[in-house]
Length: 55
Image (tube, rainbow, N blue to C red):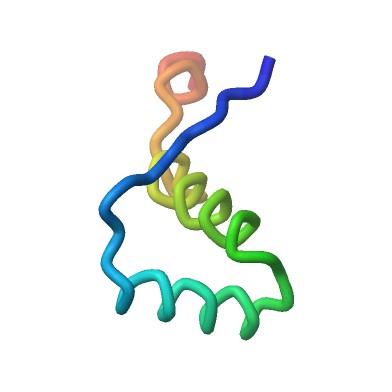
């Protein structure tokens, strides 16, 4: 199951910057938001507890 998120009260400046950033990455604003959120909560260099414990 995939979750849906609504973001309220985003400033016009942030919304414009998001659209510019999305265009720079050749994706929609929605896809850009997904990428930003994924990177924030699941960074590539994060310590994975299960892997660390098994090593």
